[in-house]
Image (tube, rainbow, N blue to C red; front, top):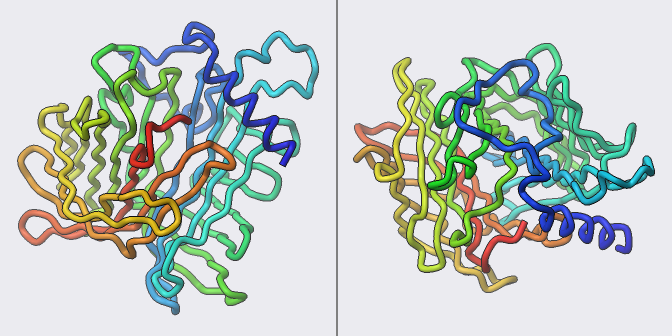
Length: 351
């Protein structure tokens, strides 16, 4: 616990550092692969985020694997090789209707080769025996968690989906309020999931987001709603909004790949409309677990695989959020499966 407390203290110093201590994300950003698959250590914060739905003999399972990198500029002047210049966090979870709630685990470490790193050449991030790595064009997630194990291969089936303006994704009215952001939807997943001592063969479809930024939330923002949905037939829908304390939308965006065409939507074309809430028996937080997302006047209804998909990560990133596998139904009978992320409902998000 003392090690964890020290790392969290370093994370607070990183967040308190001046914005000028970090490389900005600016208009005109152009994604460059394979370099942009890897880490961007000059930026303040970064994450690789894989979610998906798996078909198994136990029934449908949702999964999430997320690695975060946080730069601690306050440690730059420290000559020690043990200085916490980069901090790493990892979350993993399985949504299991038969279990009734999330199985989840988390890790935290300072970057220190060869025990924990986020490498720059390509996706290769790990903390001890937890890892997400891209080899020969495929991702491999290996997560021996507490009470479950994920050993999954995620293979791309279509090109990278650049978010925003060719990967420059606005998060507010100021040009600096932005991230570098791309997605890889429709990843074909195969591998095994181990729960309750039982090894399950698993196949399904996943979505991977990679995002890096040096700006924190806008001053009036308390959190965000986000969804990434793999549509039947090969399409993909991403939408997000940043919320204020009254539940209003401060900024929003969406991207829809459909029928071989991709369209990005402006803030005024995106709406998140809560339809049903679930209150956590552990934290008392009311989460809008059923949501209608309107994009360009077309509505998509999201329904959770199970209500209790609350993830308590206060021991690592200091956050409490709802990270849920959902089914989607849209216009003209369109359907899909994906994930819904809800933050800031238990109080202003302070990552």
